[in-house]
Image (cartoon, rainbow, N blue to C red; front, side):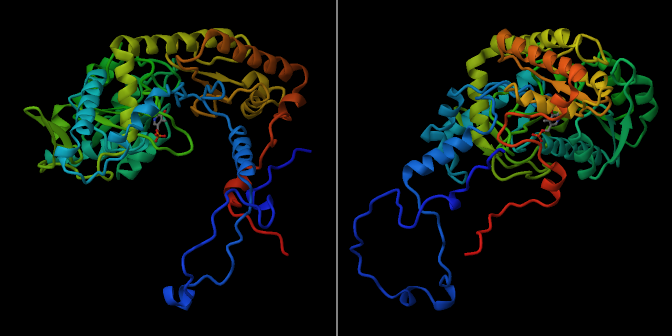
Amino acid sequence: MRKEKELLFEMGAPGRRGALLPACDVLARPLGDLLPEKAQRGLSLELPELSEGEVIRHYTALSARNHGVDSGFYPLGSCTMKYNPKVNEEAAALPGFAYLHPCQDDSTVQGALELLYRAEAYLNEITGMDRVTFQPVAGAHGELTGLMLILAYHRSRGENRNKVLIPDSAHGTNPASAAMAGCSVVQIPSDARGLVDLEALKKALDEDTAALMLTNPNTLGLFEEEIAAIAAAVHGAGGLLYYDGANLNAIMGYTRPGDMGFDVVHLNLHKTFATPHGGGGPGSGPVGVKERLVPFLPLPLVEKRGADFYLDYDRPQSIGKVHGFHGNFGVVVKAYTYMAMMGAAGLKQAAADAVLNANYLMERLKKSYLLTHDRLCKHEFVLSAAWQKKNGVSAADIAKALLDYGFHPPTVYFPLIVEEALMVEPTETESKTTLDRFATAMEEIARLAGEDPAQVTGAPHTTPVGRLDEVRASRQPRVRWTPAAK
Ligand SMILES: *Cc1c(COP(=O)(O)O)cnc(C)c1O
């Protein structure tokens, strides 16, 4: 039997303390003098009473029950769980950044404005765009912002285009963002190579097409080889091109969305640019645009006059604000630190290593797992557990089994176009030793799936809790502790 960790409320004893305070030397006044009776608490707080040591041990034990990039390999496809250098945290914690107030006068925050200005210049260079806004605070938020910019552009030209074309290999946030922006979504099929079916795309284009949203490399980890023809077709029909650049790991320093013909791109600083994510944030999904969309960018932009930086609110065609102030500024500080530290050559090397690591793992694992699209991959690849499924072992079982080997599982059941998908993204920050250990574990699980499937379907065997009832957890969440009746 595995034992659930006790809660703080179930520990300690009455009167136990973490600190010794001197006796109170302030004259006590009746509470009624200070607070009207109806505002006074009727029941005692029932806080747990614990020593400092108990509290520290409790939280240290809890922290060790989670898996993070700082504790082990985390090959979660489409998430770029690379190691985040700790120097980024130090930069973001500098008092000159951490203790600013967003309403301070421009003249008192010149350093912060310069950082935003420089970070924008880096991202313009990396993406091939003309301007970037840092206001969106997640990838999906960037998508929504980008689509709002595209719609504002079409409206400014008197065009009411409303249709967004999205390949079936796209990240689920793409159609969701398009629907949220009020657009209708048309799905474009992939062909046998796993790439956009150009003929199907051409057929779907018409005078109502606002944009094509594309991820390149796509979620199979494959580079869209006909990207120039795709861009020409969409522009030819009067539509714009939106690039989902959440994972820029594969192309950084080699090619740029702007050069491929895209008009808008969002990036996830919390993926490619080494700032932590998971658990819901904070993230940063800056959006870059080509010249013709610049007038519509959210307010304000950082501008430079002489040697001074200032915030420009004088932007009459702007779509307004999509978030308070400048988005998640701390995340931008971390990403800027990362980019400055890596330099252009370092970022390019990171992309090369990310692609090399993915291809190395793919070549080794395609002997044990079905590889439906056997082409040179970019930063990630998608295996199928179809062979194992014949023995009753699913992608989810394989994911659970990996936990017993100390690895975070890959992304499963995405993209939807691969049956029993296992999407692996090793990132550039892993050594060959780690990749080999992971591959050996995957091979071992494939062998067990053939010889002793119950071992795999019963996994995990070593974690604090086993298989959770995921449906019940989301339908009937128990998020509040209730004391046992006295
Ligand atoms: C992660 C991801 C997103 C969404 O980013 P969030 O910050 O989670 O909103 C969008 N597209 C792709 C391809 C992604 O990998």
